Picture 1 (tube, helix red, strand yellow):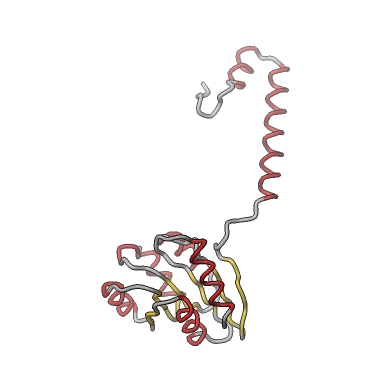
Picture 2: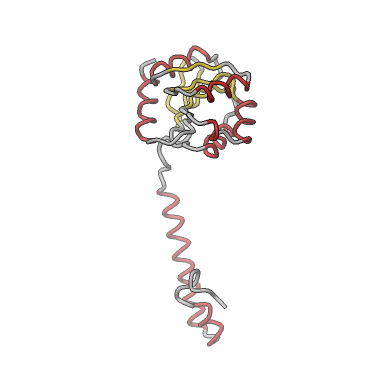
Length: 181
């Protein structure tokens, strides 16, 4: 009946086997304890750093740290949450990382792209094919400054790398660069 992967204690089997009110009561109590524990854990959850984290609003431009988005699906998810014209700072270095869904989201949401720290002509060619203005900046300070200049009041600057790397370090670099504006 119940499998051992989901019911290690075989409580449901015992309940059916013996039709025992005590077993049913224990089962109900265990479920209630588990619900409370889950609720407490969710209430205490602080979220993961560098995931759609608002850094600063400057001259009506919102800066969002999404350094935890190190793959196309995560970046697509983040772009879907953007409800303002967006300037996207990315570290993408491999065009195979661009899924069709991500390309569609970029085309629909992004007004300007900044490729930070990349030396790959395939990426440049892909960006040119999107017909969205872009620039290439070698360090985060220049990328953030360029994003600020490419934005207007009411825009969002989204740093979502869509490339493997350390989210903590990248996020700190982005936040420090924004603080220097």
